[in-house]
View 1 (cartoon, rainbow, N blue to C red):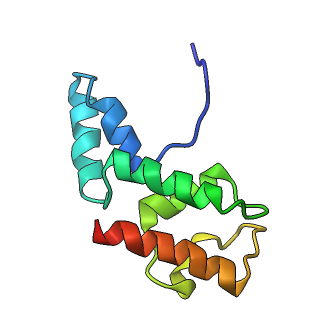
View 2 (cartoon, rainbow, N blue to C red):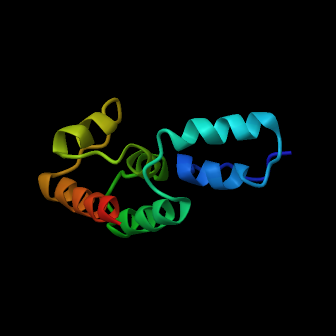
Length: 106
């Protein structure tokens, strides 16, 4: 029974599956480890910081993409949001990238 639908980062999925002791869960965790750059804790912190910017039109799903992909620059950031109706200003892009860079260093 589905109780709640919530967008979560790959790092958070890895954390959720850590308590599941099946071969499939272990396989998924190994796959995720190859692509995640943040721990679940850091991904949650980063999501909260980006949410705190209160950017119009920025959805939780978009923020999760940022935590998963960790774009390097404004061009990468535009690629993350391609296909989306979201249009950020240059200063908004800079604020997001500043937060991402902070978490890359941690």
